[in-house]
Length: 176
Image 1: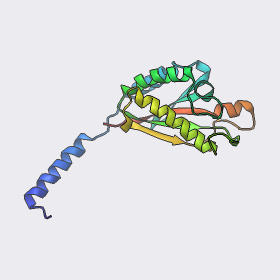
Image 2: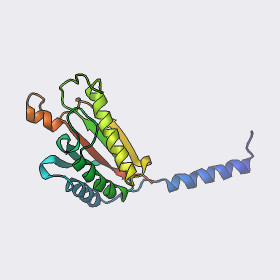
Image 3: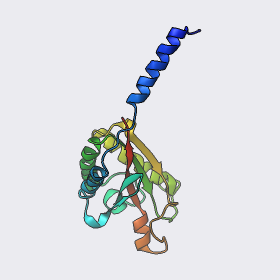
Image 4: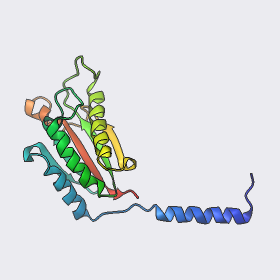
C-alpha cells in the first residue's frame, strides 16, 4: 500500500512519541550499589562479592551455596536467598544479566557434556527462579561462560572454587 503524505507525517509523529517514551531509565549509582549489597547480604559474607564498574554492578555468588557439583538444581539455602534477591531486583527497572561460570575441570558423564552447558543451565535456573518471583522476564539476560572467564588460577582447589560462581549483573542503564 502507499501512504499519503498526511499518513506518513502521522506515522513519523507516532514513532517519535514512542521513541521518546522508551528512553532508558537510570537509577542513581548509590541505589544500585545498595541493591547489590542487599542481595549479597542474603548469603554468607564469604560466599559473595560485589563489584562496581561504569556499566554495571555485579553480585557474585559462590556455587558452594547455590549448586551441588556438576548440577543445575539450586540448593534450598540458595533458592531461599535468591527468592529474596528477586524481590530486590523486581523493584528496579534495570536490565539484569545472570552469568554462569565454572572451573576448568572437564565434565565427565552426567547430564552436561561441557562446562559451558553446565554454566548456561545454572544461569537459566536462576533466571527462571527470579522470573517466578516477580522480576520482569523482558529485563532478564542469560549467559553461560563455562571456564573462559576465571577469577582465579584453576591450578589450586581455592582458585577453582572461586571460579565456580553465578554473577548477577545489574546494568546501569535501566529498561522501561
